[in-house]
Every structure is written in C-alpha cells, then in structure tokens.
Length: 265
Picture 1 (cartoon, rainbow, N blue to C red):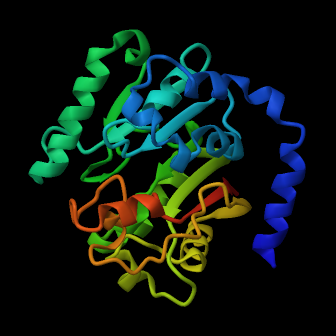
Picture 2 (cartoon, rainbow, N blue to C red):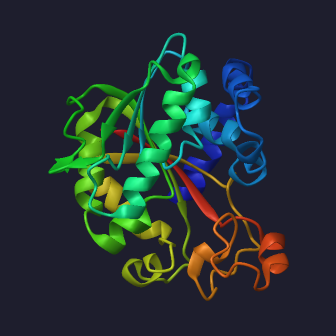
C-alpha cells in the first residue's frame, strides 16, 4: 500500500515539473555524449530517472561509483553552470586489478575532456571508511545506480548507506536504481545473481534514517525473467555468455530495475 501511495503522489507532482527539467533533456541530448552511451538510453531512461529524483541545476550532487562514467557524462553537463558534482570511484590504489582498471579508464575520460569535466570533484569511495573525503551534511542529492548487489555480496551495504545519510543535508534526496529481484527472494541469494528484493532494500535504507517518498517503474522490464546462467550479467551490456543465445538476451534488453527516491529525515 505504501508503494502504491508514493507512486501516485509522484505521478501527480510530475505533471507540473516537466518544463523545469529542460536542462536535463539538454544534457541527455548533448553532442559530447558518446554514441555507445546514447544507445543505452532506451534501457536506462536517464532524463526520466533524473527528473524523478528531482535533480535541479544548482544542486550539490554526489554520484556513487560512477564506473566508466555513463551517468557522469549527463550529470556533469546538467550541473556545469550552477551546480556541483562530486563523483566517487575505486581509486588508483585499489587492490583489485579490474576495479583499479575501471578507475583508471574513468580518470582518462575525465582528463580527456576538461571543457566538460574540469569542475568535477573526484574522490575515493572507500579509503578505510566510506566517503571519507566528503563533509557531513554537504550534499543536496546522492545517486547510486546498480551498485547495491555488490555491497551485499562483498559486505558493507549498511555502512555504505549510513555514509550516504551522513553526507546528505537534512531533507536531501537519495536516488537509487537497482536490479530488482522477484518477490519472496532473499537478499543474500539474489544478490549473487545481481538482483535485490525491493522490500529488503527499502527497509534497509529506511533503517538508516531515510524516508521513502516515491517509486517509479520507468526502469522496469517485464521481459527480464531473472533466471539466467550468469545472473544479470547474462543480459546486455555485459553479455557474459558472449555469443551464446545473444539474440535472445538482446531481445530481453537490460534488467528489470526498481527506481526509488528517499529523503534524509
């Protein structure tokens, strides 16, 4: 019932917000975005997702673990004139070669386009503790995209969300997109396949001092059966099975995702 009510409230409120979101649309349509990234808009719905979170051009925003910068590409331009973007990455001293490589690739992207990215603040996600380099009560918005399953798999999920609460201002927004497990799934088991139960995640985040204020189905995908040999990584863009049944998985598209908006109480 709570999910239904917050979804209805979001639909009502969005009716008056579309005109104010043109700066998001402009950032999504920008020529500086790569064609490879633009091709995924059909699955990730960036304009609708950021509008749902309530992004404003003068906000201080923290993007958690940006990967190789898919959303950074959009956020950097949207916030370039009046806002401030801080991005966390794995750091060039991360002990895992793969994750360190992702960080180095991301840093090359930032360094290669200073006109867009020179004002970004880049910091390490975990350096002994989470978000060590970010001050308390300093951010208007924190966003995290498809990260939570890894914090469940490898540990730290509660500490991560506790850190998000610490750095957000009171009333600040936490926006979460996450691969969604089937109802009745257990978080520990489903996270091994990349999916997280909605009920588990909402309860965990609210236990950290947040309030769920809206949900959206903008990133839902009813074709996602969530029963693949290599979990969510079977689907695009990972295609972990490579050419095996690739047409089948391409037809399914990217995963079914929950999209949640919380505020810091």
